[in-house]
Length: 128
Image (cartoon, rainbow, N blue to C red; front, side, top):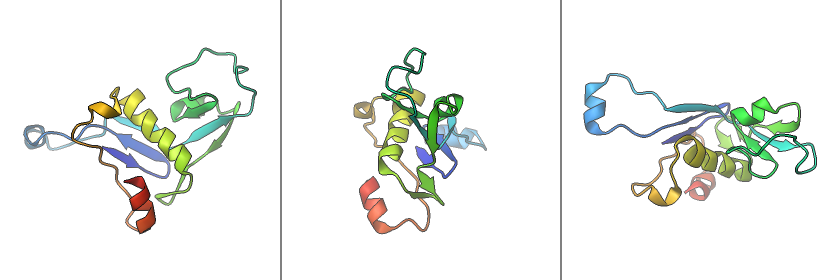
């Protein structure tokens, strides 16, 4: 499950019915900032080794915040509505591959992504 929020993205696995019955509270496994940063420097000039959040010169979540002085930061969501589809795609890939440590091919039961109540229908179709 991925809950894309304007400022925070919550990521985790949905509990089974047994886990849900035995626990009164369910929390996301990860909470990451919904932020993406593009490098202000030429490729290869960041001076640090590549990390799992490194998509060329694009950084996501806490990695983007950590390097905020070297990056141009932006929030790809506004009021729960997607404003930058490329950055949201990067955020989803980061959430699944780097946070949950799962490959998309192994998600046999699918991926649930929440949306804002006022989300336009064309956005819902594109997200699907």
